[in-house]
Image 1 (cartoon, rainbow, N blue to C red):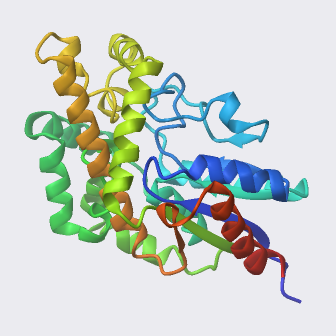
Image 2: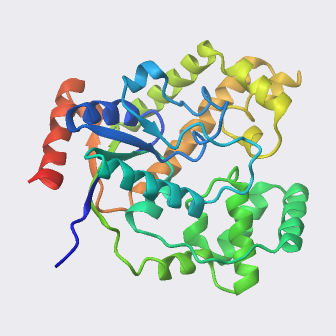
Image 3: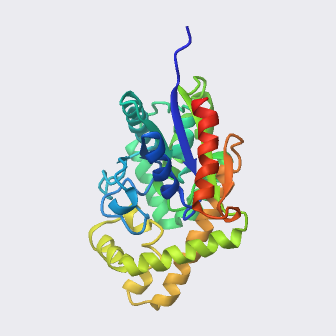
Length: 315
């Protein structure tokens, strides 16, 4: 007898597309709990820059896998995330609630919906140190370009700021002679134990999405992003400082550029990130896209979403 699959609602899309709001609204209807799929919201103290939902925005809905890791923790991998997310999804389902996986980190989403089992390839500290020293000398973009030459599939989904993942992929290739994406393909032989409904949010008019991003950055500045960036700069090194929202403001903090220019660069960096997210998610044919700018209001968007969720998960 075939084992009954766990229902899983997945909400993806670029930054500022409205994923958090829709996840909360659907959670209220379907007794859901949200599991974050955001590689930066996992870190403590990085609240405004990562658009971590406030307690008011959560509206009492439980949110998981947010705000639990110190920003100076460098060893947290996609495999670590996948392990925690699967465990969390199982626990939510056992409570009789609907797990809602929501976020914009494509690798995190893929790990869950495709049931990627990451190979246990032990790290080589000497090799990792050599790669990290090369990154300091050549820069993140040069290391990503090196990865593109050996593993274009994996590199397509990575940003230069994701240095730990870039170095890990280069390390795996040097240790095994096999690209990380090939290891991942071999690791997807067992189907995911989920009955999945995947919704994608964006705007049909790309300029409207960019307008939302610009408005969000302005709101972040009003909420104290500059002070948060100053604090991160003071306390942490590495990953935290390289997050979008901090590195663009660093020149102002060091007296090198005016604040207005840094804010404009932050808006541009965030728009570029949204483009990369859309490129990543556009490859997945399972995603049912909802163009938020084609609906009269949020009620109409919610109604359409409810119909899709009901037809795929509850019929």
